[in-house]
Length: 126
Image (tube, rainbow, N blue to C red; front, side):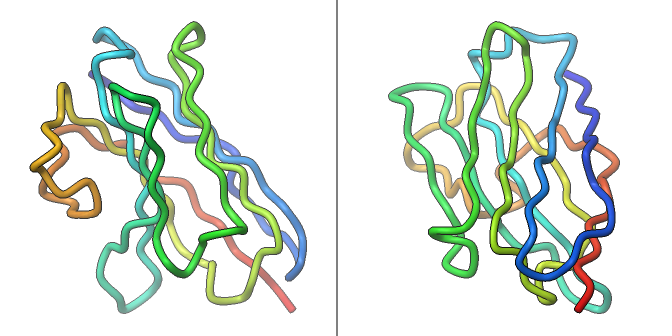
């Protein structure tokens, strides 16, 4: 499956952005979809995930209550709505996918995912 992120940009602290990840080449509803981010000089961190079954969503501690992951299986797209953005949210944001992820697999671990997009830059300014 191919993943293409969009929607990144420059935003002031306190503002909002919505990222989109369009998928092609697979049965979208079969995939657990995740968002990760990498800030300069740091490792890739888990942001959010949407499971392929059960409608479960998961969030990293630093974004809970501010970010929302929504998947649209009809449009083969997963969105990340980011509100109340902070300076520390500045990073490259990546979309990831894993087909039929098991409940035993850690959704927050980058190596659990097989497919990745190229990323989109989000910069939050003061």
